[in-house]
Amino acid sequence: MNHSITESRNEATMHLDEMTIQQSLEIMNTEDQKVPQQIRDVLPELAKVIQVTTEQFKQGGRIIYMGAGTSGRLGVLDAAECVPTFNTSTDEVIGLIAGGQRAMTVAVEGAEDSESLAHEDLKHIHLNEKDVVIGIAASGSTPYVMGGLKYATVTDAHTVAISCNTNTKISQLAQYAIEVNVGPEVLTGSTRLKSGTAQKLILNMISTITMVGVGKVYDNLMVDVKATNQKLVDRSIRMIQDICDISYEQSHQLYDSADHNLKVAVVMHLCSINKTEALTRLRNNDDIIKKAIREE
Figure 1 (cartoon, rainbow, N blue to C red):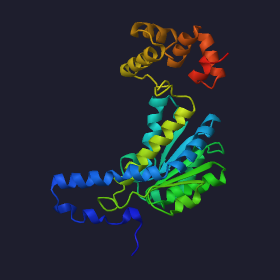
Figure 2 (spheres, rainbow, N blue to C red):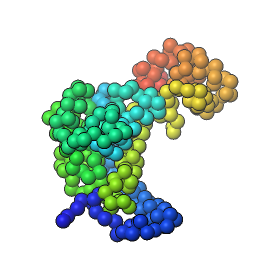
Figure 3 (cartoon, helix red, strand yellow):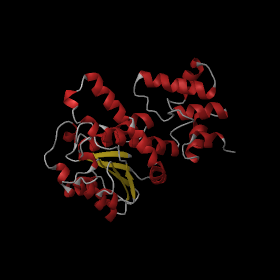
Figure 4 (cartoon, rainbow, N blue to C red):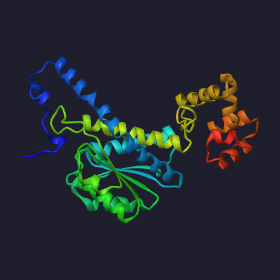
């Protein structure tokens, strides 16, 4: 019987249950190191995907992750983390998991096998042609993901498939296909391991570099961070201090005078203008600090 890569047995761990803890750790560590090496091979395709997500996001399109089980949870996680990191709204980067919110912690029977459920989930968020639907499935054959990509195609949305097999079904349904062959798992079929790591790394790249492209980063600083706690308020003040090369106390005053808007504070100081003028400059320059401060 032929198995997909994600369901094949790993020759190096055939006697995993007889290994010492140290041996088990060493083999897992060795196997994990293969993941970034395989991702390197798909960077050209990934660059094309990020060009699309960046352009569509600028036009008001959304990034929508779809998956079941671990794949779905990773999509929901990446979407959720964009909110505090990049100050996105919950409607700009969306994670859809087969079976809904309950499936984050428990298996929802039959959910991943339903293409129609994916149609309903995308209809519910009013999918449109500006959006980018990213289907995630380690096996590359999850019906829920296949259904989502089919519906997205009919809706003229942009489509991406991420899998950890080769020549997968979801790749055939998407405009852009990312296939990362990480090899058989240490624990046969447990795609939360190397496959999950590969998916997490790829989603990190998609969301982070997209947000860089739409101006939510200055140099390598998270200047759109949502300061929801004291630690993040302090980080915001220190970023102002770093960018503007002023004292912490001056940065704190500037942050307060800008109504706790880090970008406005920076433009106010660097251009020697007031809050209203800084807001206008940012608005006229796609909310990008470097463009705003270079405005003639």
